[in-house]
Length: 248
Image 1: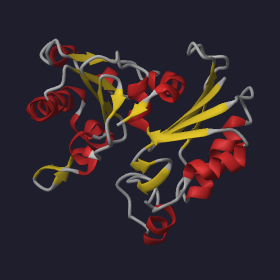
Image 2: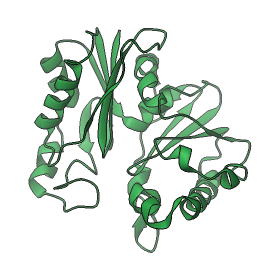
Image 3: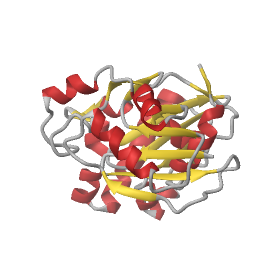
């Protein structure tokens, strides 16, 4: 049994699944609390785990750059009140180099795997053939690349500049969807796909995350046969398959 935890900028949800990916308890969810030092995220995950059946291992997906369970940088959790609010220097210090895997293993007493949330999401959908990329659309933008089922080193595409000084997070995140409306925002998603296609030359691109379902049918029809919309539930189901990932 695996406890799968999906940590986002706006909410944190968790469920317990068996080896086949079958959910054994209704998912539990809480709003992401801010300000959010690492110890508060750990206690939040422990609280969610206490509402679910026991599990033999834990998978946590969270935004940002992580290496071997250690946080290099996380864009949302260093802010005072969530995405697009003021960055708190003390939180930058608390999060940089924080060993989330070790902290959770101590708190929960079972093996823990901590990855970027898009990597976990991708683990739930990739076929393991060719070059596959996933882009998650939610509070911001997440991404991961798999080559023959092997997870490539993470690139934090969300923080890259796209135009006019905007990052990908700024250009396609939830704030812009609410400002523009779904139709105009969907055209931005299409533009994003067109910009990335010659850079990655994927065999298949998956669009997931909570906002992927908001892409207008007119835009979906124009994305191309190499683009697939996948459900947000992959972020939980991937918690099981993530343990089988090979890392490049």
